Length: 130
Image (cartoon, rainbow, N blue to C red; front, side, top):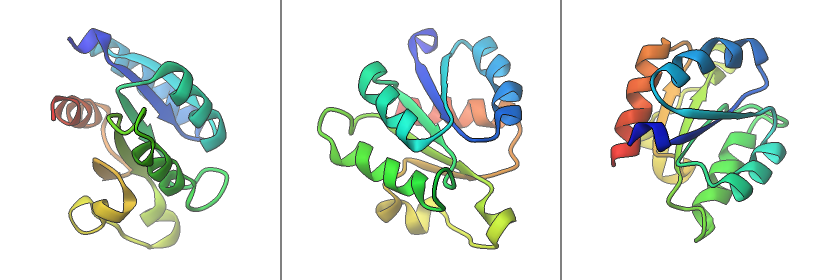
């Protein structure tokens, strides 16, 4: 059931987190947050969320990639779905896609910001069902 799904949102943009959390909760998700990859890794090991939605650029420009690789390399965590939700394209002009880059990014989905909350909810639901 969706109401049992824990989503960990990882982003340094607290305004964005405050905007999206109520809609995710209304959709039936349990939601936790982390403001850094280090904090996220601690929470992931402790809470074992079903879905992680992470920004790419956290402490470092590639922190999200490192976090995704850590999750997928750990046999105790590799069933966690990882969605990269990032504004890297807006900030740097660099583009990535799940189809072309997902294999090395170690992500289950890749989304460029901005994205509406309803679309994010749909993407989380879809990725969780896989």
